[in-house]
Amino acid sequence: MISIKDLNIKYPDGTNALNNLNLDISDNENIGLLGANGAGKSTLFLSMLGVIPIADGSITIDDSEVNKNNIDKIRREVGLIFQNPDDQLFSSTVYDDVAFALNNLNMNKYDVKNIVYDILNKLGIYHLKDKAVYKLSGGEKRSACIASILVQNPNIILFDEPTSYLDRKSKRKLIEIINSINSTKLIASHDFDLIKETCTRIVILKNGSVYYNGNMDVLNNEEFLMEAGL
Image (cartoon, rainbow, N blue to C red; front, top):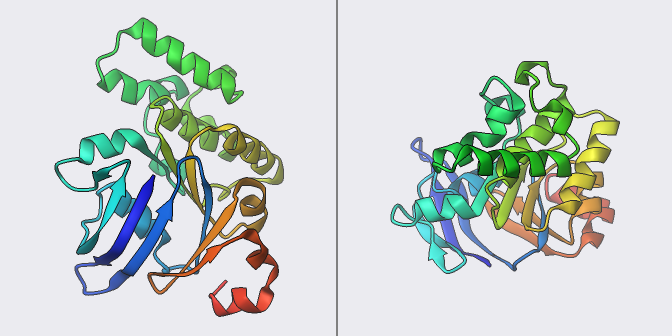
């Protein structure tokens, strides 16, 4: 359960990025997060991970409020898939990248290998385990990023524009992967096709606040979407 109450985020230059934002998300919901550029989608994700400090209000995840005292626990429960895979992948091979978080937990190598191989198999990228990250295609990089989060078994996964840099075939594979993940998912995207195929509820942000919170039918209302900046 995610509960966001009267959330305000202000950048150092004085910009109000989020304004009295209120939102509740139940376990295992799939939420499509929409909004024009600058509406606050990425800011919301980063504030949920404690990367951007909360000026006022609160974010509570599974009864733990996001603050410096709980941040380690929060980051074990919430995983973020970056918009640009190159911002997330940094090791020499796919295996090393996916295993990185587990190795930091001082798990024995046998257990790490079993977990990593299991995730790579589930995502259909086991054959890439020894491949250099810089040689991966856009779709392969996206799958490797997802694998690096899934090995941590988070309860909540945040996807920031996940179809960026993907061709049609890779996008179809990504949709299949997202739908196979049994976690609470928030998907920030301008890709309506992706949202329609992966989500059950729409939240639209405008000027840092919730402009719409409801069913998927809104994606067929062109006039409303124009008003929302979409």
